[in-house]
Image (tube, rainbow, N blue to C red):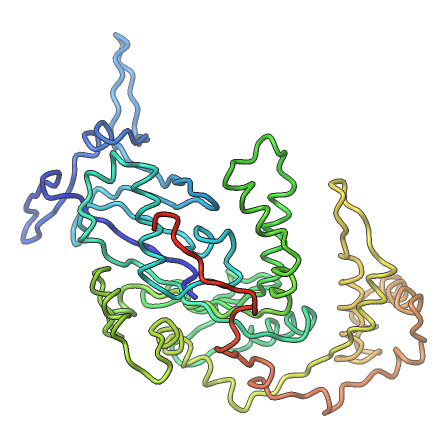
Length: 411
C-alpha cells in the first residue's frame, strides 16, 4: 500500500521572481503577497516595536498547517524557494487515512492517492490552489508498506526484538528512533528509510487518543475516524501484523527510473510491466532487498506461550481512570516468564533483587505454574524457527476478505 505521499505543487510563473547569486539562479515568491491573496496565516522570526508604537515584522514564514478532510488532515506548507528549490506548496498525508479513515491496509493506485490529496487542498484552500500550477506537481516522497502476519502479538514483539540486531551493507540500524514495537534503519538517509513496527499497538493507541477526547472537542473528521477505527474486524486483522515500511525519497525513486513529475509517474504505473505487475511492490522490494538478504539462514527462538499470557491477563489487569482495561502488569510478568525460558532460572535470579524476583515468581505460580516447572524451563531446538518462515509476507493476502478499494469523494 501507499502509506504516505508527499507532493510539491509549484507556484504559477507569474508569482515567481528570480535573482542571480553568483552562478546560481534563485527562484522565490513574495510570501506576504501570497498570504494576502490566499488568506494564509504567517508567523515571523522577528517582531520589533518602535518608540512611536509602530510594529515591524520580518522573516515571515508559513508553518505546517493541517488541511481538514472527511477523515484525516493533510499537512500543508508554503516553501518560498531558494537554490535548487522552486517555490511550491508541499502537501503530505496518508492517502489511506484520508480515503478510508485508517491505514491498516489501503490502495496502491497512485492516481487515486495523489488526486485525493490535491482535491482535498483545492476544496479546503481554493484561493491558495488558484495560485498553483497543478500540472507541474512532483513527488517528494512515497512510503510503500507491506505486512507479515504472525500468530499473535507476543510473537510479533519477539520479531521486532530480533530485528533490532540486524543490519547489512548500507542498511544501518537507527537506535535513537526505537521503541518497544518499532525498529528503524537509515534514519538520516537521503535515499530511503526503513521501518519495521507492530500495527495493532499503533492502531489501539490512536483509537485510545480519540476515545479519550471529550466529544465536544472532537472535530467532525475525528468523529468519523473514531467510528471507522472502532471496528472489531479491523482490530482482529491488525493483530499480529508486522509492518515493513520503506520511506522512499526522490533520489531513490530516480535510481529506479521512477518519474518525479506526478502525471508522468501515474502513466508510468499504468504501463508498468514486471513479474509482480505492481510498481509499489517492486519499489518496496528493492528498498528492503539488502536487509532481507540477512534473513536467509537466520534462525530465531520463538516462544508461543499463549496459554500463559491468557491466564496472566485473566488474573492481572486493572481499569484506568478513563474506563479502559490495562494489562501492563500481566505483560511484564509474561516478559519475566520468557526470560526464565530463554536465560534460565539462576541467571534471571542473579540479575535482579531477591524481593523483585520472588514477587514475580509467586505471581506466576498464582496462575497454576509450579516453582519446579519454572526452575526447569528450557529453550529447545523445537523453538528455533527460520526467520523467513516467521516473516512470511504474503502479498496476495494484504487485505481482509471484506476489503473494497476506496472511491474518491471528489469522483
